[in-house]
Image 1 (cartoon, rainbow, N blue to C red):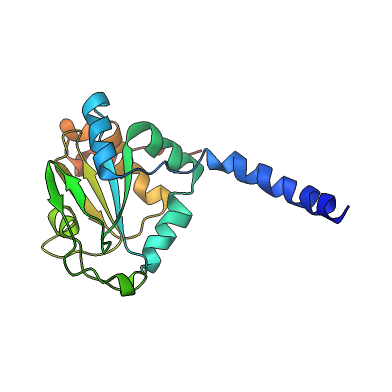
Image 2 (cartoon, rainbow, N blue to C red; image 1 turned 120 degrees about the vertical axis):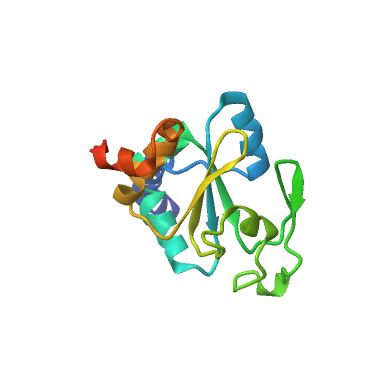
Length: 183
């Protein structure tokens, strides 16, 4: 009886979680995303994060868990979650990148910077977290954008790359005429 009451109390929470599960970004790894992009031509969005980064957790919680933002990302991008200080080798554009300074004992603390981070995420020679790297379908970096953004702040950038506007118009010009589609 007690187990039945416990299950009945948890049922609404489980149903609520299922409703929002569809709203979450469907992250993948870089190699899988690049293969898919070659098939369908969608750009890639890479969330370059670290385990210790507070703004990275805020971006995940507040922006990537926003239903409208997540739905747009899932429809228009191949989203990749990449630990900027992780120890796993990563193949990008046919080259393997590693983290020779990675220390497994410091897994959830500041660690060595992955070679791929330095290849795709620097802005003016420096890296910061979080960084969102936008890539075209062929795996060429379009631009890295550093820092936390709310759903409202990220929307024009996502639209610019997700709708392919970057191919024909500069961002400042696009941004002046941008109208939010948020409900």
